[in-house]
Length: 191
Image 1 (cartoon, helix red, strand yellow):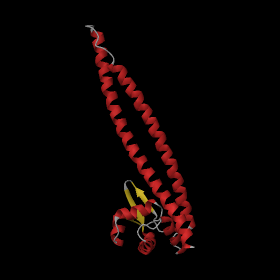
Image 2: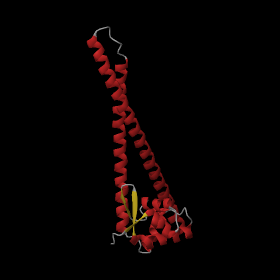
Image 3: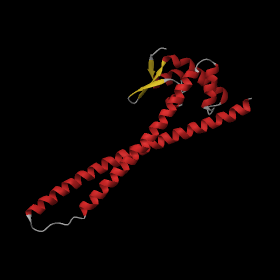
Image 4: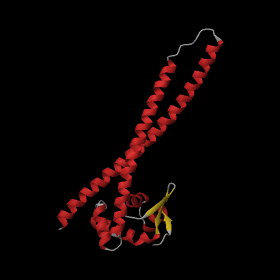
């Protein structure tokens, strides 16, 4: 197997298709790729497969189920059963990642709740009398409160990011499930 790659935008331009379409094919396992940071690279040996996918999408319609496309690629010897096993393994890993995100989210929510309780307790403190030592304590507490509020804000931002990722994963999984359901009907009516 060749390990030569091209940036996804170059491959999309080469085949006169949209980046998002090629990215979708990568995400559902039709096209082999790798990511380095935020950049997705397509293996150059996937060119024939991409040509065939375009041909199949033109033949069966742009909303043809990915499972049907995958089966056609296997028939055309452009995708092996081994690659589909790798894709299934990747799907299992994505499920595990989704569970990890949920666990991280729950832990984050618990931490935020604890911080909110600490902040509430500190806000309930009343200003002490003229005692200088008590004033010093109040200043320290206010500084701690400010730090906790900043930490709370950062945690809320991380929480929002995790929620977005979780929504994205959920949408992708729903789409995959829809596509797999369409494949069953497609098989029934093609026979």
